[in-house]
Image (cartoon, rainbow, N blue to C red; front, side, top):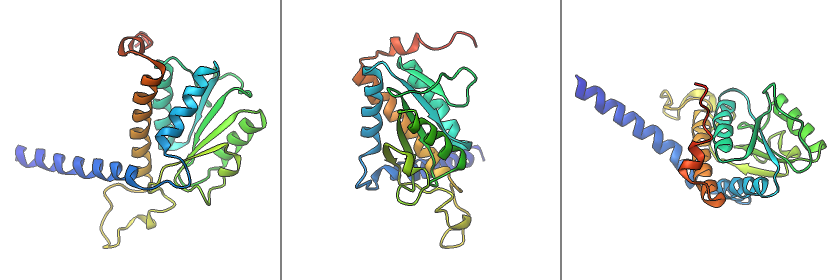
Length: 204
C-alpha cells in the first residue's frame, strides 16, 4: 500500500511538473522571452538605484509576494503594493504586475497610477492581445499558459477532471519563472549565496 501511494505521488507530481514546464516551450513572438525581459528590467532597476514594486491578486499575488522576497534577498529595493510601508512610486521605478486572464479592475487601476507617475510598467499575462491591462504596460511579459480565461469551463476535451484547474498552470508557471529569474539575476548582479542568505530575516 505504501509503495502504491508513493508511486501515485510520483506519477502525479511528474505530470504536474511536466504540464507547467511545457509552458516554456511555447513561442512568445512577437513578445520577448519572459526570462530575458524580467532579468533585463530588474538589472536596470539595480543599476539605476531604483525600486521595484509588485502587484497581483489571488494566487497570482502569492507568487509575486514570494518573488518580492527573493528580490529583496538579491539586494533590490523591493515592495509589495499592498504593504503598509510601501513608498510612493516615481519615474525611475518599475512596477511588475500580473493579470493572467488579461485584466482585473484593481490591477488595471494600479498599473494606470504607476504609469501616470512616470514609472515603467511590466505586465505579466497569458492574454497579451485582449487583456484590459495591456494598455498601461511599458512592456508585456507573455507567459503562454492556461488561465481561467482559457480553461474551457473546467472540463477537458474528453470530459475528464483537469489535473490543474482554472489558473493553476499559469500560477505554477509564475513560480518557476520567478525562480529562473532569481537564479539568472543573481549571476548578473554578482550576488553570492552567502550575500543572499545574509539578507534573510532573523525575526522568525
